[in-house]
Length: 309
Image 1: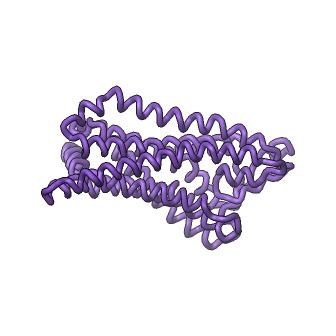
Image 2: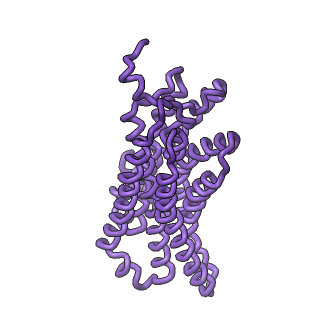
């Protein structure tokens, strides 16, 4: 079907995995299943944290926020990807690309900082157990979440317009399955070093600084656990932190590995799969990690399901 030149030039072509048509149908099936599990799992965590009064604590307040972010993170790009994988049409409108980029930058930034907030919460629970509820009072929890959301939104508000307004000299092919910032910057036909340096600065503030705070928190937690004399006490402290630490490893591990890759075609393919990993696999695994390792969440789930029977 013919399109007008004006509308056509504002479309982007998401190359994705179009050079591997047999792989596309496999990815469509796998991604549809994983996305469905991610939506169901994260929605369940949010509902449990709202419905069960035993989960009205700082830890589960942050967990509900994390599940909401994971839900938004996957939904910002996976449905569009499924549409592109299913049919021959691989385009996304300019407005759709802007929304995808903004969502990706803001939600990713918020989640990085929220994981650091959750690490501080675990530090307070393990290292200051007698003063935990005094330290993590509701007002502080709201302020910490507000800082996380504000920082992520500032990142997106600054970087999205700068990235989208780079001159591309008619280039429309995005070598990715979503409108991700590095892929869009590579399309520029002008010197984009200033934008890249600003993006690097934000990455230090939003990715590396929270990761440093997480490592410091767990350093204090490890020292506190080593001072616990009873095996039962150490096991309880381990159970308190293991789920969050697993999520941190999955999320930060994939992001750091991806952005440290050189710019050859092999690493670009790896980058696509790693982006898919922390956009879909990590949000799908997070509810399972917290549910399987947490007696309180499992108890709340049984209670809610029992009421419905």
